[in-house]
Image (tube, rainbow, N blue to C red; front, side):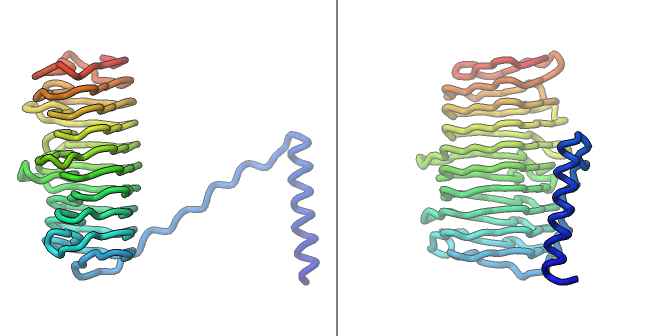
Length: 283
């Protein structure tokens, strides 16, 4: 078949589809192609530097699989990415901070299993988290699946699943006068089954979590722990477990938790209720 024959065949097929649409007998939609599974290449531990793209790698058993700790290396990492990579049995999967401000870092399609702290991020701005499936290691309550510390600014994320962990699935903690702020995470599952608490926000401001599922089997803690945070929005959520939906240590303002469900008879909030409001929470 020549070039023009191919073109004519394509036009004929198009004409058939147009006629089917006009006659109300359109062909059924074609399923999107199935993405092939990622093939990981085993890698030694790496230092992430500006401009690096780490892709398709697997890391097993390292203390620091990928380290961009700018305090240790006196570097600010800019415009770097870690994509389509896997971490097994590591202390840290990816660690960024503390020191000069890093920016423009993309963490995409990462898988972690049995890692003490799959992601620890600090002093990082204008960065993104996409399609994360991170499983922590039960044990120490100081280990967390996703640990956002001081100096995190203007971070966005979507499709994030955090499970187990010794301490918290998502820990947002600012221990200093360098605030974390302007964080937006959407489509988030925080399943602390086998660990402790799903979500802790301490000392951050201007945070939005949308379409969130929070699960805990703990009887000695809440689904959400707050302290010293401002202008926090948690909306379109499902929560279960814990001795309350929220425990607040106080010092909060402008915290709104709305349009979600927390079934059962446990209280919505314990501790200090000032600065925290609830809207449209179904019991």
